[in-house]
Amino acid sequence: MSTEPLNNELIKYENIGISFENKKVLSGFNLSVKKNQKVLLRGKSGTGKTTLLKMLLGFTKPAEGTLYFQNQEIDSRTCWEARKEIAYVVQDTDLGEGKVKNLLNEIFSYKVNKEKLDPEKLRVFMRELELGDEILNQNFQELSGGEKQRIGILISLLLNRNVYLLDEVTSALDVNLKKKVADYFLSREDLTLMIISHDREWEGDWTEIVDLETRSLEAGKASLQTR
Ligand SMILES: Nc1ncnc2c1ncn2[C@@H]1O[C@H](COP(=O)(O)OP(=O)(O)OP(=O)(O)O)[C@@H](O)[C@H]1O
Image (cartoon, rainbow, N blue to C red; front, side, top):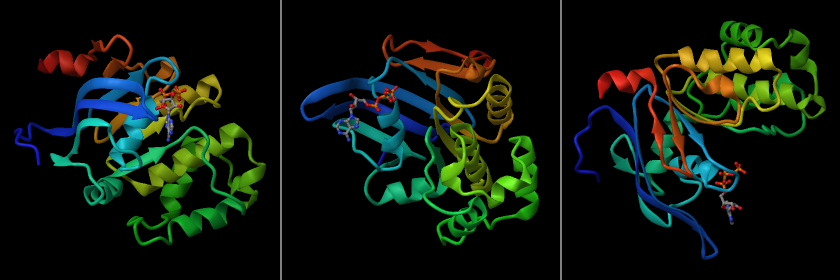
């Protein structure tokens, strides 16, 4: 358990090291994310960005250091608590075979997803993401890359979590949609975001940019005001 004061800190990476098969990917990484902050992780391919996000869900363990979520060290037990609060959205959402509407119904039948599939919210988010009703009757596997990405985002929004880990979720979208999706998430003051993206649309006024190579922090307006 951390002895640090709460201080609105939601996520804390403390001296984190990542290694795979004796290959050191990252070492001594420190980052503190406060509730409702928007953090964009940047860095060349292979610098460990995705691994840093997966760690929060307990999918992989740090080789060194400690990771905290809501002041609790993430381990095989506490990661289940974290998973209830966090939506992890990937670049290449794969829901398997079946009509989109059936797949959505299946996802929202799981007990862990406390939210029910709300038809009104579904309609609102589909309109926001420029998804027509006809997509619900299409086979997921036949959708375009951009449509699959938007279905992944749609599901995450319906899950109504507090923390969003967004891993290249706009890579296959056209410029208008990239902006629309980024603006939507960045304007949600109630959400804590950790974003990996090469799209400039995520570099909003309030976005903190963390560069894994230089370890520099470009603070958004929000943190400049509070420091
Ligand atoms: N489960 C694993 N087993 C072995 N090596 C792994 C594993 N997961 C990640 N790696 C390696 O660790 C390094 C960091 O991977 P990671 O996906 O975190 O990087 P990234 O910065 O997100 O890269 P990209 O921008 O290309 O997605 C890579 O060299 C990758 O091959």
